[in-house]
Amino acid sequence: MIYLQLFLSFFQIGLFSFGGGYAAMPLIQGQVVQGHGWLSMSEFTDLITISQMTPGPISINSATYIGYVVTGNIWGAILATFAVCLPSITLMIVITRFYLALQDNLYIKSAMFGMRPMILAMIGLAGAVLFTPDTFMDAASWAIFGVVFVATLRKVDPIWLIVLSGAAGYLIYGL
Image (cartoon, rainbow, N blue to C red; front, side):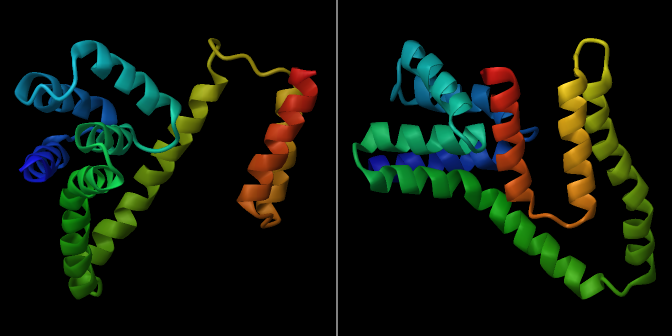
């Protein structure tokens, strides 16, 4: 019975949490702390901290942790993680099927072509945050940025760029 409750709770969280992991936190709290009493408020606060420290989306990390704590085994973690992802996966499959069926439609092509500048602007805006007066980039940071930019244009593997940038940052700032 606990597995069914766990699945339904996290399926609802995945279905109604629009806006990312932080937007899901009140829903998770409502289900886990207030609804079922699986965690205390103190444990829930610890959960938020752990979910932020570990790599990956907060709602998925939370589901995995809660599933394991509630059931005491890996199957609960897998079930909760699957349940929170299932609505998004289903929606993406449906949208993809419609897109593939309509991708040659003139209106769909025009809409997709029209969205390109907007997507580029959103990515640029996310990068522009680095250039505000509140953030400081010294000469070494600019040098790393320039080297990575040129390496990206030369099609260097992004994983290597991340690793080497981290190593350069450690050598410059960590020592």
